[in-house]
Image (tube, rainbow, N blue to C red; front, side, top):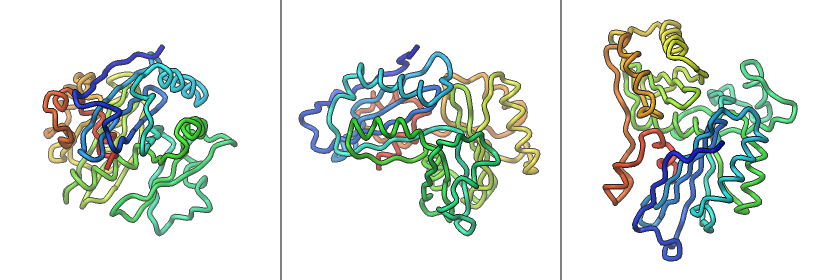
Length: 282
């Protein structure tokens, strides 16, 4: 079952009066979200988020869920001047440019991920960083979007996440960043505005969550008393995880999105977890 958890519409949203409309969408096996932006005035005009009542286990089922959302949501019925799709899955790795070969993308993923013979491989360049993100996009969803919009751009959501963390929040010291989702979380460790470590972990219990973070910190020899750990994502719904992790780290902080909206009331309602979606419109 598809559950709409959030819907925000600006009082300024008049599809017929907007000169340049941009659509950003993000999808994973446990949810789908999108925002409509006025590029001329740099305003977010509409935003909706859907959760699936259980994690979908195949790209085919994900496409069926996305088709249902597109059929029912009126904000997705408009025409758009540009469209950006963000694929969000665990099938990604970051490769330094010195080791990168675009003719051999599968090699970077095959030892740490369960791949299919039919998988397609793609890569993103990471702005201001000497590395690429190599990943498996959902080709069937891309084909659906081509039929729907004709042309669009796509990236991996983790590319956007890492890019913005390094640009906006990373410092000279070692820092841990945790992006929470409903059934998985991403962990990034940075130093000197460079990426030291990235991985995605599926979790079901609080114990799973704590174990993966502490194990990663131990492997990288991080001092839990001094290292800063930052959280973003499903923070509002996962407060118990933050409370639990505070038992192990002295410095636990939250990351909030840049203010992008002119309507303060709408801005206040926007949840922290979708910050990378709104960054991506630029």
